[in-house]
Length: 154
Ligand SMILES: Nc1ncnc2c1ncn2[C@@H]1O[C@H](COP(=O)(O)OP(=O)(O)OP(=O)(O)O)[C@@H](O)[C@H]1O
Ligand SMILES: [Mg+2]
Image (cartoon, rainbow, N blue to C red; front, side, top):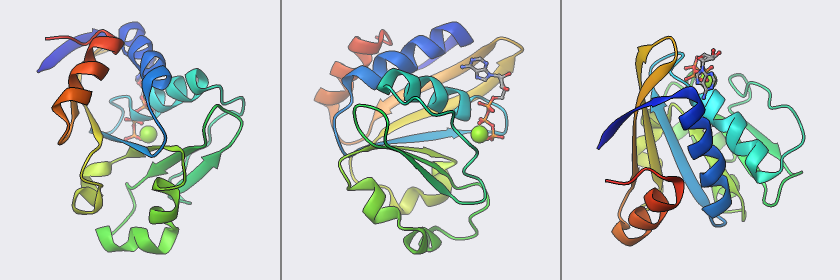
C-alpha cells in the first residue's frame, strides 16, 4: 500500500521504527533523487540515540555510528557500479554486526539484500509530501507488527 504523508508524518514513522527494530535489521531505502532517504535516516538515527551528525556516505559507501542503542550503518549505493562491489566495502560484516543498516539506493544491490528486510519506497509528490510504501520482505507477521507500531496500518 502507498500512503501520502507529510514530512512530519514520515519523521514520526522514522522515529517509531527506530524504537521497534531488532539487531541485524536491514532497511532498504528506495526512491529517486531528493525523495527523502537521507532525511529518513537522520531522523531514525536520532531516534536510535545517535548523537553525531550524519555525514554523506556517498564516497565511502558506508559510515558507522556507535553512539546509539545499537550500531547504525548508513550506506549509499548511488555510485556503486555493480552489486558485487559491496563485498569490497565490508557490506557483509556491517549488516551482520548486531546493528541496524539503512541503505540508500538499495535497489542497486537488490540481489545481495538478505532474505528478510524492511523496504521503504519514496515517491516524489510535492514540496511537503511524499508517497511512501513500507513492506517487510518475507515476514508477514513482522510486517504487521512494524506497520501497526509505526502507525502505517492498512
Ligand atoms: N523527512 C523529511 N523531513 C523534512 N524534509 C525532508 C524530509 N524528506 C525530504 N525532505 C526534503 O527533501 C530534501 C531532499 O531529501 P533527502 O536529501 O533526504 O533525499 P534523498 O532521497 O536522500 O536524496 P539523494 O538521492 O540525493 O540521496 C531535503 O533537503 C528536505 O528539504
Ligand atoms: Mg540521500
